[in-house]
Image (cartoon, rainbow, N blue to C red; front, side):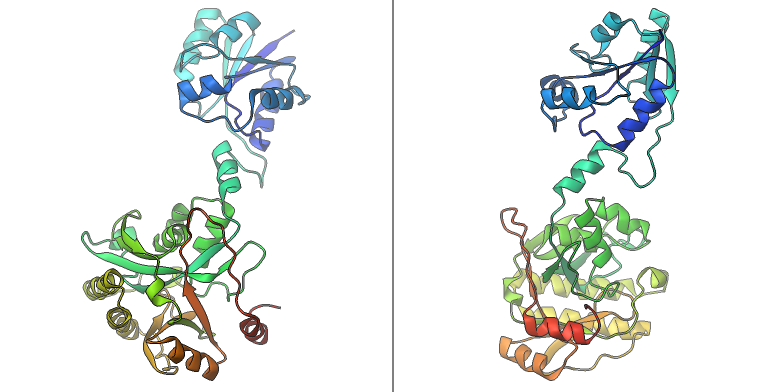
Amino acid sequence: MKKVFVSGAFNVLHAGHIQFFRDARALGDYLIVSFPPADLLWRLYDKKSVLEDADKLALLNAIDLIDEVILSTDEDRDLSFKSAFMQSKPDVLVVTTDDLYTEAKRQLCAECGVEFVVLEKTVPAGHQSSCTQVVERIKAPAHVPLRVDFAGGWLDVPSNAIPGEFIVNCSISPTVSLKEWNYRQGAGLGGSGGWSVLNGWDPVRSELGLGVGWQDPAVIAETGACVWKSGKHPELDFKNTGAFLRGRMAVFDTRIKHDTPGLAALERNFAKIAKAARVARLGVLQQDITVLAVAVQLSYQLQLDEGMQPLERIGESLAHKYCGGGHGGYAVYLYETEEDRAAALASCADLYPVEPYCRTFGKDEQVPWEPEYLERLRAAGVIR
């Protein structure tokens, strides 16, 4: 009988583990799986066990591919399974290409005359590929806000970063979820970043992979009215709840196609973009909507210079600009008073009220639109 030995944390069993067990089992007749108990996993590897040891044992023993499960008990980071390995007397030790302790394991096999096999890490199509990804999906919120940007857009793209400058934005409600998305999609409110957060993906990596910046997932995950330092990765300068904006923001659906990645390479005046962001930073710091409105209008003028179509003034707005840089989608409008916003909302069917959203004490809060605005969304064909 040819015994095959594998070890690992197997913290959250997933399809990748099953594939590994299948590939390892194919190398012999008898598969032995070893894992460190929770206390050892924490002490040696700084990993918290997701499952109780008894539950992990029960799950592994229930897998037909596995013939024996044994605990790793040695206080040795490289070879915590050594005692179990020596006791089992296997013929083959199997690891994957991403194993962190390959050389120690290779040397052990050489000393014991055991065959050492390195397998490519394979995952069935459509499945999670790591325990970390599974855990992040579990931890992902059920509802997230989207965002409006006030100034500094494009300074969150690593290649455009200017040290000492800023990006200013605010998360907004109504919130969205995987089953309820009452906004036009791909329309400049950071929807792709929100989708990444909801799915438990690495949202910053996902956005940078699209060739755009990191501001959307950063503010959606952080929430509040935020000022960020321009750079390769999100670094918060400061934030507040955005309460000074309550009752004073709205978004206008231009019904024009929005395409930020497709326009990322256009030439822009980054010095003027940075100037507008400095003014916006002051507006958030002082919680003064009139100062913030100056920055928004500066940003809008830069959008016009870039070739975006002029926006109409809706009611007694202080300022307005397109959300994002995609030459369409939604535009954000600021009003001095709640009464001014209410009058504007009554005058334009494509204008919708939004509020600053700041998550408190880890609450995962669903914030819906009022029924009258849901009817507008249905009439506009945004939702059914």
